[in-house]
Amino acid sequence: MEQNWQFAGSAKKGEAFEIRGVNVWGQGWQVSEGEEAHVNDPVYGKTHIFRVFTVQDGDEKVEFAAGEYSDGVWGFYVRQ
Image (tube, rainbow, N blue to C red):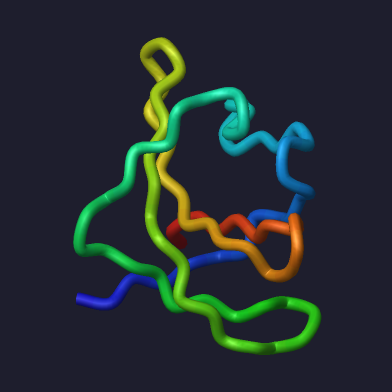
C-alpha cells in the first residue's frame, strides 16, 4: 500500500531540524529496510525517492523520510 508523505521542511546537514520535538540530526538514524518514499520537491516539483528512517529519543520514536536535494541540503517528510 502506497503511503502519502507530507513535506516537513528542509535543512542543511547538521543544522538543527525537529520533527515532533526531536532534533533528528542529534540521533542515530535507523533505516526502515525495504521501504521508500516517493516525494515531490515543494520548490521545483521534482520527484525524489527517499529512504525511510526512524530515530529514538527516550520514549519518543519518530519516523520520517529524508534525502539530499542538493549538496548538503536535505528534505524531510512525514506520513500524512
